[in-house]
Amino acid sequence: MSWFGRYLRSSIGAKHAMAVTGLLLLLFAIVHMLGHFQMFGGQDMYNKYAHFLQNLWEVKWPVRAGLIALTVIHIVLAIGLVAKNRAARPVSYAVYRPVMSSATGRAMAFTGLAVFAFLAFHILHFTVGMVQADYFHTLDPKGRYDAYSMFVRGFQNPAIYGVYLAGMVLLAMHLGHGASSWFQSLGWRHPKYPIDRIGTAVSVFLFVGYMIPPTAVLVGIIKLPGA
Ligand code: HEM
Figure 1 (tube, helix red, strand yellow):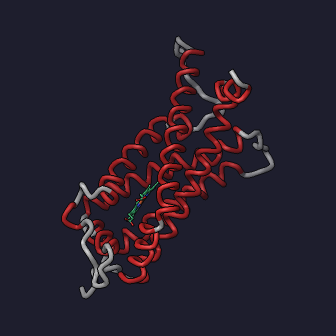
Figure 2 (cartoon, rainbow, N blue to C red):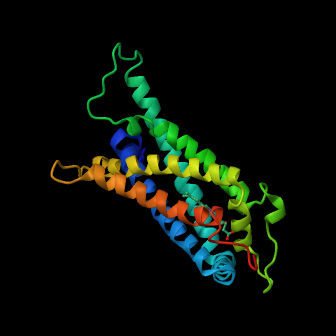
Figure 3 (cartoon, helix red, strand yellow):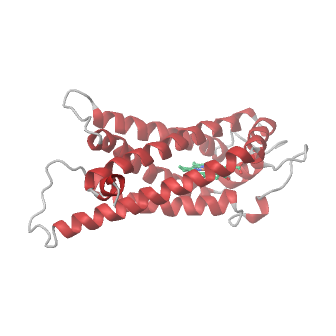
């Protein structure tokens, strides 16, 4: 086996690779979240943006393929690490009193799986159009896919809003701890630096940023054209 294969099979190699794939996924999550703020610019602005992204095939497919690959690598490595940890301690502690790990840290496997389930729902909703199918791929007055109205109609429904709210709580928990773990995995943790606060700041930033446009729809600040 090559040195790289051996490195990835070691716990530290797997942790490094999880840190790098997690960071790249986080960068996508930040860019995607910022894009939604164009909903405040109205139907024309948002649809222009969505149309631009949909028609940029040279970027769209490599980004999709990259996201799938990063997600698969991240999950496979996570499963491997959990299995290794279990194998290292086949008999659980009589009294489990963790010193270093936080509750969110121990919940990483659960929040990771739940975020994955949320993303599956999200893709079926806004990319495949299986949820709220009537609102999917309608056209705007300029003949483009009306992503703006799909977004508004989607979040006018409190049940859909609730699903996204729960998804964003889980994402914030997962990424907030993930951000702190990178520093740990990469060996950059130091008592002098407020690593945990960086993790909390990242999760709050993402949670608030993602929830602002859907909340603006729910309370009627962002409306359907002409409403
Ligand atoms: C409140 C939270 C979110 C909202 C309102 C939202 C909204 C949207 C919308 C409207 C689309 C369709 C865009 C279009 O058809 O032009 C979309 C696609 C997508 N979203 Fe989100 N999103 C949210 C959270 C997330 C998160 C957390 C991730 C992953 C980190 C994510 C990943 C994706 C992906 C991969 C696509 C498919 C892009 C494609 O078609 O190639 N979304 N989202």
